[in-house]
Length: 104
Image 1 (tube, rainbow, N blue to C red):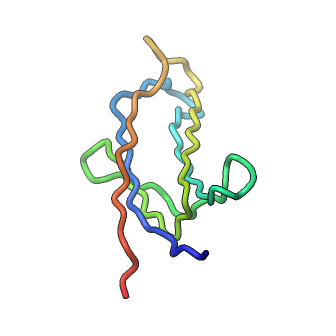
Image 2: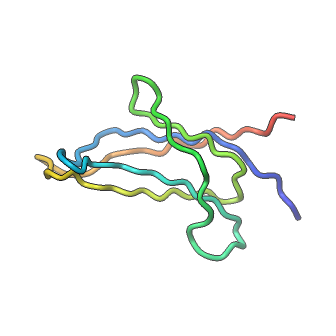
């Protein structure tokens, strides 16, 4: 049975980030993957696109199209060249997706 792919706006918020300074700069990266339940492997196919920071906020949005049954996130942290003072890390939250149909 063929299912129509879904589309969604995905959003995450950085609540607190302390990854250090210097070169390289600290980075918090979120990649989006999609797959069907019956597809082998755990990762799936990369969803093309990029995260956009919403002006004046710590919210980032990704317009994801042609999603399959499962959506997965891969989060990567890179510390800065100079370690931070205090506790190193990121506090974030991924918000529920906003699903939408294709325009016809």
